[in-house]
Image (cartoon, rainbow, N blue to C red; front, side, top):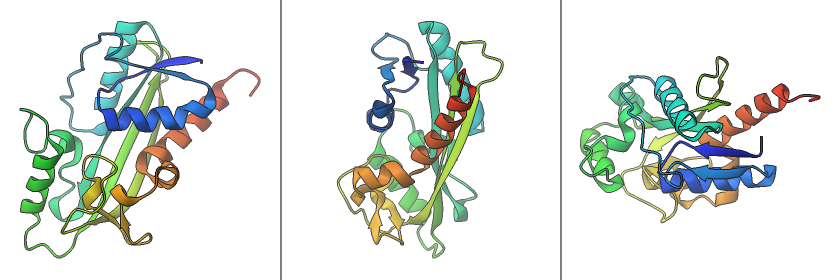
Length: 200
């Protein structure tokens, strides 16, 4: 596989995928470059949403497609924001700042702040692929009371990593590319893809 389409318009996710896939010589295209609209995400699970996005983009492009569905899950909130992490504060328009403000408001008075990022990746070779490759990853931390760091996106400035003494937004790209939920999922996905290749 030398080319695939990323089923996302999220610039932060696209940067991460490009960095992670570049060493493999895979040309990464985006659905925006091909004029493909975003798929609906009506499902209550990450894997169903990712599969819907991958099939939508593959059908429209005629190329293999990689879709990600991910979010942050806070234990004390029963797993919320979960699948609606990117639109936790509403869709008009989507806003990282408003999402984090809502999360901090919901967590007022809560002392247990454990949370984890979750990512599921789905790769389809074609739109009707009966055996999509699916991989998942988790990244555990806590919700900080204040933002720290200027890098990353989404909830990263509030995602505290005790082992590093930093938030995800303060972590160097090289380190994040090894330990993040997306990095873990992509590592698993690429291992499974290699297993499927002829003569592997």
